Image (cartoon, rainbow, N blue to C red; front, side, top):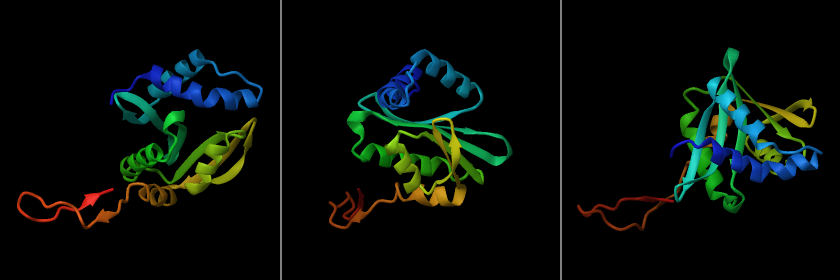
Length: 173
């Protein structure tokens, strides 16, 4: 799926405007767009999940200096926050990051973003401090890879239809 910065900014707006307003701020789409373009120039990469030709989730990360990887936004469209899109997004992150993940992984979350705070804890991040209205997190590559790999392991169902040659092909769910 092609990367459309405008779709990513819209996902940010849908999810972050209420959270930023809770912290007495205002979401500015033009500021976010220019920041995202600057992050892209610095080498930020995006993992994008689409449904029906529309971006419904993304994770942005940036390989920084001295083996540090910064996890930037993780956004999922409100109408797709049923767990399946998150599973697909984190599963793809688990497939893409392990070979390149550095030792130290950092992230920060708005203090009022309870959903993201919970996700960070589930992914094994540990709180390391606070900065303005954000909570700072850190984890290591082994812990994160282990947690992410859980999202793309799938059960094999034995009662699948037979293949053309008569063998049973397991179906993954």
